[in-house]
Length: 434
Image 1 (cartoon, rainbow, N blue to C red):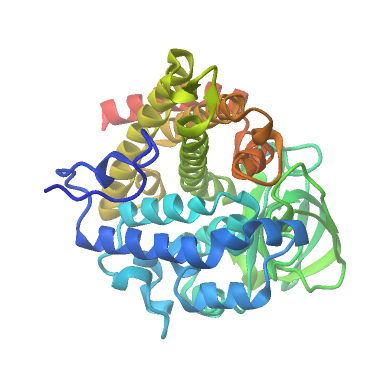
Image 2: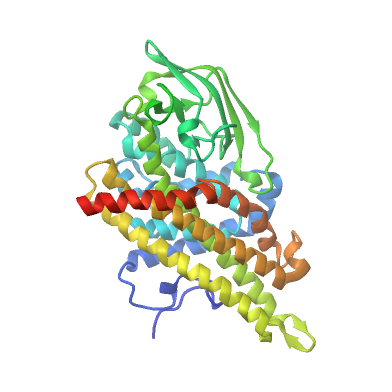
């Protein structure tokens, strides 16, 4: 008999949870999936509403999260094995056997908590702020920062967006002027996830002239003199610690530069591929949650003597959402496979990106649209329950507020849609000539 795992709601789980034969998933992937699900169901999901209402996740919860290896699994354990120390990864998976499909499972299953704010409070800043350190930092930099991050003692965030520069990263204006052995940083970073409580910010700064060629990556200690933080109150993700960071003549040690001076643009762009796949994975799990909760309601809610699920119009809603989720997830899995192959053979930054920048952008847009439809149709099925912050529709209502940041963050739909075509043209030509 084939293994069956998870929900019996149509389209609420990835295909391999109920059908055998996918060669990408082994016993170690199943162990990881099973352990994360138990952890989320018992220690995270039941408390999400409380933590969101309090606008923070308790320190003890975050420390236990790190002790159990959940901080580490969002940092590509295959690349940080030397820095794990006594931390064990969930599911008894070793760092040597960790691959990109373990990464996908971690992203997907953690999002089952149904609260993007809590999910991001537990690790978003590290997940997007640490990859430049992991991929491009010196051994000294990695040894200095990664072990305490993994142990839950310090936290990172990523500073790209500014009041006048978002998806157009090359237009950032925060400056870092070199003086002797320090950089003097001035400027503002806006909508920084975990910025309210992070210890370090991996910041995109201007160290040279205009455009891409004048950009560098600098790790800024946020306890430095001249750093100020202001909490940003957004529609959703209340517990994520979203903030504006202002730098007023902040002195940053020159040794905190990642990579070479004025070569930061390509470094941060390569890191954005993973962020966009990560966002796509979050989107699709949230879409599945919406389906699951509205389907349960449709089974029991009666209208004119029939359950909602017996109405063709309602079943068509599930079918239309399911089509988008399944197809978007298939693209995501394909890109994860290409990315995994790229990691195994990468010898330079272009190969690390695996020539999938345009497709990663497309995956984020596709997953976002699937989730937008899932939210809309689920709220229609749930009726007033889907607009209420308690009861059977509470998770759908919360997702309806959290969703917008996934559509805008990591690159807006409009810019990423255009970029997907332009970048894919470049990548295909490069591959054709290689």
